[in-house]
Length: 345
Image (tube, rainbow, N blue to C red):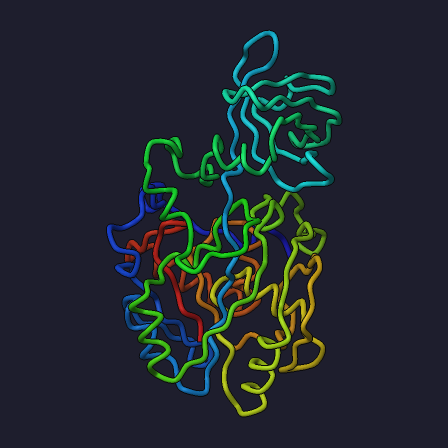
């Protein structure tokens, strides 16, 4: 199966550049896998599609300001780092721009006088290992000078909208560690969560820190040769017990986002059963994968030829899901992080 089998025509003007004024004002395409049908709706109807036997699972990861702007020293040329993963104390892997000019040994300086850095290793695709020198806790400096790591398809500087600090974060974000938001959760408001709970739906949280693996481009033709880079996740004993009990009673597990789905499936030990655990997940989901935990999926609309679209097609069926995407484009649903969503039942 080729990555070209997961393509669709996407008009550029459908890529949402700004969030809506209200989080829960987004549209929602409700997709029925069994009937191969869909209907247009709005996100505020989510509670109406759930029952008191269901469990809604959220990813409570919190995005940190992973984008740093600085200069090469002593030349003064501008550079940009996207911090991906801390490999040891004050040492990070990062995507760099411009990548080719930042060779091993390059010295970097930042607007904050307490922070300097040096490139200690160069890797493929612009990846560099960066060793920071800081006079105070590095996390504090990053929080002070970093910017929200908006995706590259949002064609504006993250600093142009102070609202990004709040809107590119779910309202239940708690565990610091992601370089991208679990975007399906961006639609939730306290009112919608309250309405969900008032229907008797249990709401639980897991953690998966969204890293480069989630959005890394698929660079192989044969999709089965692609591997998602490992990302840290955690599921507690209490959450595992709720999920396992619900499945045993015939309830559904609704994953909010592909990251939540990957965390749940990574913890599966049997159909309908998860094991509480923390660690790294490198699970890559292709068509043909047998989902053991996730019964329904709330997700945004994803990039053509992406591993996220491949996962959605594995869940809903490739031909059927691509037809739903075609409908969404015709009906001008907004796509990507600040876009609309679909509920796949």
